[in-house]
Each structure stands twice: as C-alpha cells, then as structure tokens.
Image (cartoon, rainbow over all chains, first blue to last red; front, top):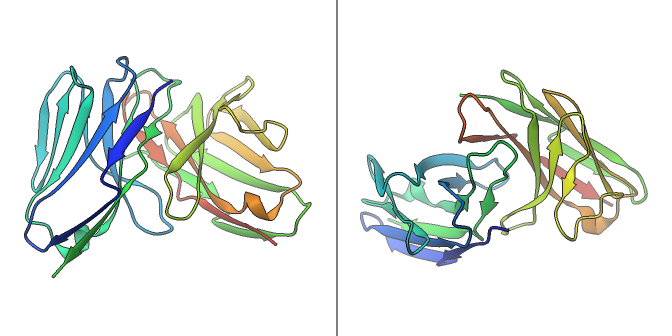
Amino acid sequence: GENVEQHPSTLSVQEGDSAVIKCTYSDSASNYFPWYKQELGKRPQLIIDIRSNVGEKKDQRIAVTLNKTAKHFSLHITETQPEDSAVYFCAATTNQAGTALIFGKGTTLSVSS
Amino acid sequence: GAVVSQHPSRVICKSGTSVKIECRSLDFQATTMFWYRQFPKKSLMLMATSNEGSKATYEQGVEKDKFLINHASLTLSTLTVTSAHPEDSSFYICSARDLDRSYEQYFGPGTRLTVT
C-alpha cells in the first residue's frame, strides 16, 4: 500500500519568510496529492492540491510542486503570516472511488511576528 | 462544496459501554466513506473503508469486532466502538468522496471520544 513521508515535523519561521514542507510517496499509482491545514480539534481543511498531470500549481501565497519521477511533492508558503501557524498534512491517493487518502505525519508550522 | 456531517461532536462514556458515531454526506451520495483516527499531535490514521451495501475493509491492526462499521445507505455510515476502553479515547473523523468531483475528499467535523 501507499506510504507517505513528510518532513520536517516542526518548522519555525519569522513572519514574512518562506516555508517549505516536503513529502515523498511510494505508490506510483497515486495521482492526487492534496495538502491540508488543521487547527486543533477541527477537521482538516484543503488548502491546495495537485494532480499528477501537472508539475506545479499556485494559489496566491501557496504553491505546490510535484516530481513524479522522484515521487515527491512540496508545499511552499511565501510571505508567511502568524495566522499560517497550524499543522499541515500532505496526502496521496488515486482518483479511484474506493481509495482513501494516506497522510504524512504532519508538520507543525510556527510563524512568529 | 460538498458537506459531510458527523454526530456526536463529543461523547464521554464509561469503560465497557459502546458508542455509535454517525457520518452523513448531506448533499451528495457516497458509495464509499472512510474512517480515520487521530491521537493528539499525531496524523490521521486510516482505520477502515466503508462500502455501501457490503462489508467494510479494515486496515491492518484495526479490530473489526471492536470497531463495527455499517454503511446502510448512500449517505450514512456508522462507526460503533464496542466495549470501549480508555485507550480508545481519540478523535475520530470520517470522510467521503463526491464522485462527481472525482478527486477531492470531504471531511466530517470529527468526534472527540473520551472513555472514563
């Protein structure tokens, strides 16, 4: 089955700096890679996702890159703000109906002002 | 976007009792729903895949007799924690995929279970 590794587990940056979180996956059949932000006690919130037919996607301050050959994908947050502080999870799955998301272990991002 | 509800949001029960958690897709039909468990400061661990009209598929290490899953309709899956123990205390989250949207999965708000 799929296995997703995520690094780093914690990340501290100054407000305005960039933050990068990296993930690798094992199953070459995976073709959908979402990123979630989770606040304490709440459900994960999708912040950006990428499908395997593209290499990069950007939405304002957030971007995701995908390298299918190396089986890794990364989340980039620019101009970080204190409200970006949260736990971020990467995940991988296929677009087949019965396939679950497999999550990385999470990264706790702290943005200090 | 699609909406998934979960009930109850919080439950406290005594050891040895059973607790049922409901997961509903409110505006779409879901032939498959997923149940996750999350310990404090940990990731979401897939417990089982719930299939409408058939048996659930459990992940390795998850006791099917302890975590009973029923998916009786295209909008409802239930997770029953039987003979609960304090180590079952956790955050349980369900998700479902709207096949019309193909890729994205939608999460319920989660259920915080505390077993005393």
